[in-house]
Length: 349
Image (cartoon, rainbow, N blue to C red; front, side, top):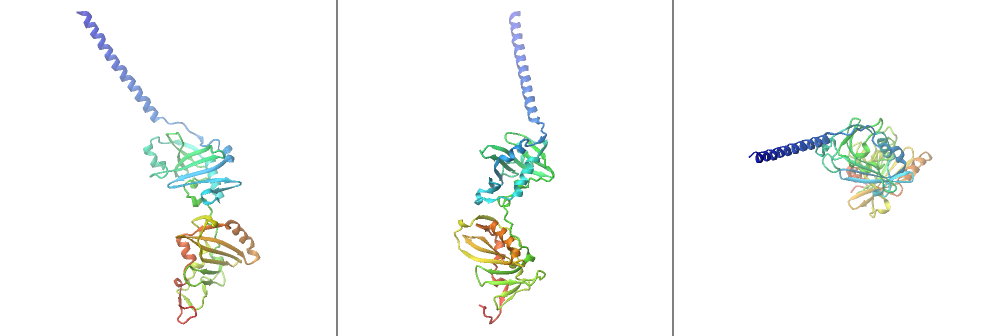
């Protein structure tokens, strides 16, 4: 009788021992997994340690944020945007990006939980709480830098790196900014170069899309309002009615750019401004479907204006610039919106 009892006891001990071992293995596994989840790498120093050596090899920069995705490439000593017919990119944008990458330094490790990325602006581009993806490549297409940039709070920027579950915080170097990564493609282009200054404009000739052409003029910089000089037979609605259209080229920012040769529409109006210094700038307005584009022509009326005319021509020749509705309204405002015809006048309707 004792032998069967001993075998039962042994079997019971083996079962209990097996269960205890399984529980121990499970506990160890859970502890390891918990430790892995809570583990954070120690990160310090520059984020992109090789950037100084790599910068000269950069040939392409790709930026994606929201629904916007564009690429700029190096062409000789300048950067251009292929999607805008290789129009030059602002040099200060490239310099700012170089400063960002060379000066970015780790300041801490943040969440590895994808559900919490949104709070730091580190979700995928286009998603709620999405960041901006930057990819920098060399001439062979090899990736030199890639990161997803999130929110910037003070001098701290949050970001993620490819293959890294954790997100990170980094300090921006003094004088640097991450603004370039959230700017749209048109903001990377110098589309605000035409700025004559309102006080410099002496005379304006406007040919609207509809109605008669007219000329606005003032005798000196100190004069507050532009007077209607032509055509005869019209009286301004108010003393300053012509100031809006006359001051259009004081400062204007275009919306987009493309090669003029790609436009197939006709010229539907023009706006010519003449400055007190003797610089004449004409915008020929071209209809392209429902949009309006400006082709710029310059002329020096005095020797003093020769350099300014040449520089403006060099920058704008061969290009056409997209106008916003507001800019178009000011540039080609019909005469009937700023003046009334006098009864019996020679040009009265």
